[in-house]
Each structure stands twice: as structure tokens, then as C-alpha cells.
Image (cartoon, rainbow, N blue to C red; front, top):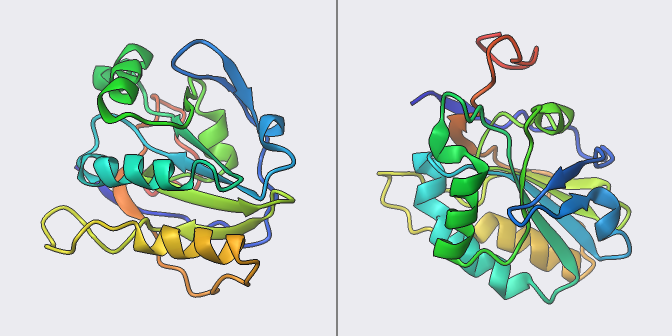
Length: 194
């Protein structure tokens, strides 16, 4: 398993547009989250051990904040031909199994992952009410095997600051996880093996 860090997209970047189908076949787009207090866009998948490590707490986190006014959406951009566990049918099973209360979208062309410079699973991008990037980085400092309790502490602190209308700390730690599984010939310039 290749370990990759977030690209740490520049704070202040506008949220790139997207229009992707969720696990029920409904199209979800960036404009669906207009008028809220913010938006979390996260790149996850089904098979990655780093996502496995946090997914129960991630489901709890989303439930805790589902009525906060901050939208939450997850995107899977992995190559499903070579990673069939990440197929949309399996995504549907994942939603049911872990009780995800957020839309889980499939990025078949991987164009949305590239637009966000997403590099790993999980990778988190939090935007304010104007869809300007204010946080990117880790869920918390827990990793598989490091004995740190999974809490979502970093992302919870960012959400709480948004809700309290406080400025977020500029010191943000990159997420770490498995690299996004790019389709053959589709890896972006920022991918280390490209």
C-alpha cells in the first residue's frame, strides 16, 4: 500500500465544481450546497485501510454535524476496474453498513479528484459559506497501528470554529492515506509516480 500525503491545496481556493451520481443514482452538484454555512468535500473509498481505520468515527462525525448547516459529501475517484471493491455497487453496501448520512459520489473520469488535487484516501477539504477553502488536511493524527484514538479531532475543531465564526488556524496537518488509484495513463502531474 503506497502512503501518500494531501497536496495541501492553497487556502482561499474556490471549491471546484462537480456533478456526480450518488449511490442511489441521484446527481449531486456543488450548487446543491449553496446557502449553507460551509461544505466538506472528502475523498474516500471502500478498500483503503486508512479509511477503514476511521470510517466508524467518520460516520459518527457526520451524524453529529448533519444539522449544523455545513454540508458534507464524499467522493470515490478510484479505478474500479483494478479495484473492484470500490465499485459503485460496493459503495452502496458501504453506505448501508456504516450508516453514512452524506452523499457518496462516484467520480468515474477522476476529473473531480484532479480539480481538487486530491491525492489520498482519506483527503478532506472544508470550504466556508462562500465555498472558499479554509481547511485541508487530516481527520486527526490517528493512523493504522499508531495507537492514537480515532476522534476526528482536527476536523471537529475546524467545524466548531466555522460554526462559532472564528478564524481557522493556518497550521494544518496533511492527511495521510493510500494514494488515489488512477486509471492507466490518467495520473495527474502532482502524483509522485506520474
